[in-house]
Figure 1 (cartoon, rainbow, N blue to C red):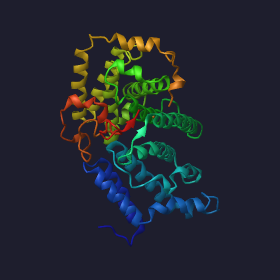
Figure 2: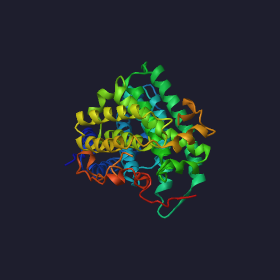
Figure 3: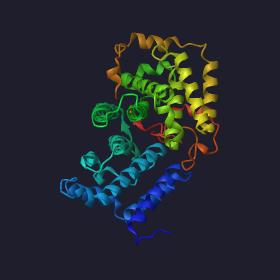
Figure 4: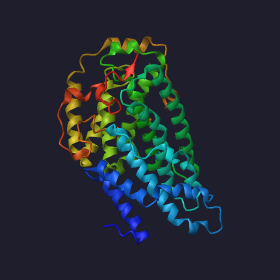
Amino acid sequence: MIAVADPQRTLEDLQAAITIAVYHRNCWLLIGHAIRLATEMGVDQAFAKLAARGMGSAPNAAVEDRDLVIRTRLWLALYSHEAQMSFGDGQSPMIREMEGLSQCRRFLDHPLSTASDVRLVALVELLVLREPLHTRLSIPGSALRRQDLIAMLSKFRTDLHAWHTFYDALMRDRLGLEPSSYYRESLRTQREYASLFANSLLLRDVAQASDLLRLSDEEYILALSAARSAQICLDIVVNGHSYPKNVPFAIPHTRLSVAFAASFLLRTGKLFPDRLDPKATMQQVDGAITLLDECGASRLARALRFMRDRVHHGQGKENGLAAQIGADSTVSNIQEHDLAVVPDFDLAFGLNQDSGDTANFDFQFDNLFDPSKHPLSFGDTSLFQM
């Protein structure tokens, strides 16, 4: 029972509800309950009130704004968790960008903001950037023309690069963090995961190397950037200085993202044999499997191990056409800066949306690499009009 008469106790209860929701098997239902509780308490209005007061410009603002700062922080955390769940499960989020979240960067100007707020606000901004694509794909019965998708992905790449540049510099200059620090390694994985999740849509109808011939040069660059992003993510997850130490404490969303990146890399390795070193790929996937096993995500590790073994047994059949496509393409000399564009993936791994990585695994392995099972495709193979 929530003691509504005690405001401080109410905020503590809301914080506990959020924490339970993101780790619980019924996370989607519980996060909805936490959002409704927050709106009844007026937490959703805290940021607007804080902004109207001038973000701590008054002499005693640091003391007077304490309650609003706590409420704003809780609302941003609620949005970030629910948005990640909705993107991964193909659901429509309850909290939308229209709540003024696009201005959340102003929260960092308040004297009571902390170092961890930089990471929180950065994540919120990233999810706000991702929302238009997710919302557009979520419209029932609406097909997205391929040229419109390319335009959205190109804009997203530009916005994503600007987002990472700003927050990486902020963490370096304001927080004094080294590139090997957890926050900056995490920021880079967020960028690359966003690139992977968005640009992998271009490969949803690509089953073999010959299908790449249908892609334009711009599409090829974006599609390849998805594979490169998966590669970078696994490199940080497995070989990073600080990031691997924190994965055991991560929410299920993060572990599912690691598993998705590994499975995507296994699938696309045969499409880009001239770009992705098979040996290095297997080493990264092995590292991800070991890490997931150590984190208690044994079902995800078991699925990846099965996929890896299937791919390993078929590696002797090199696809020469894929190599020729890469060598002959006018975009063969792609530079790293060209690729700096970044689900949570119950659908990709046959998990129930409320069960996380402890769910009963559905061993339908032939479907795991089916592009139509991509969490952003909702299984609709006719989503795009060519």
